[in-house]
Image (cartoon, rainbow over all chains, first blue to last red):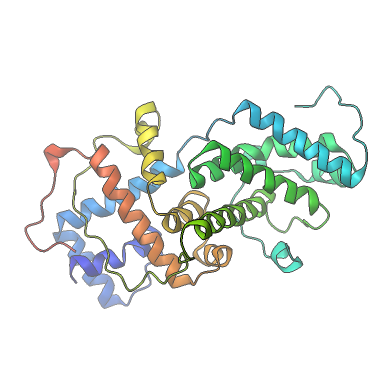
Length: 91
Length: 220
């Protein structure tokens, strides 16, 4: 197996979905064991995915919150009639 | 949105604050706007973040967020709870982003986003080095967070949306293909390209140059 061929299978490997024959699995493992660049690339990709999964939400701009509620309230009134007066648990 | 689309439910997983919304939904269906507002309050951080990552700016993300919750309002009676509400809304948001991109593209150049990507060769990894820090440490640093989001924003749209749906939001390959209206093999190849492009970019930022690995053979 070449580095290029291993690269084509990285998705399946990273996602734990490697569906190969026994011979292909052995070739994959053998290549990875002896090719440090491929090991580092695989590790980099795993960390790339972890990085984005661990990402923080974007802060919601305050004006958006207000505009969003107003737009929804307006549409709600058009569709369902007047909105009851706001109660204490409103955002 | 047709009935079929509403019933076809992906299964991205809700966070704790996004779960157990059925009591609020039941109240909203009886005309309780306060309950509807509370649902919006709980789900909008994830929807806005999803849209912000894809569009790269607050104004478009705001527009997508608003359209998504307006769609929820319009179809409140049709959501039956077969899958988490957040995954249903993410699907709507993805469609909104796609619509926005198509609209912009039509103004600039002919549509080409659904081209098959499998024919073009993969970019070779150029800068190969172990990272200096773990992902958990990197996301705590303000400067790193900016670089991480910048790298994503610089990906071509068609790769960015596949990466965000698959790797960040947790939709399956099949669900991603269905949402985007492209083939499963095309999702796979776009995801691979997205991962490789992001790896290259982020390794330039976070890789340890002292430990750079230079292949002694023709490396893929």
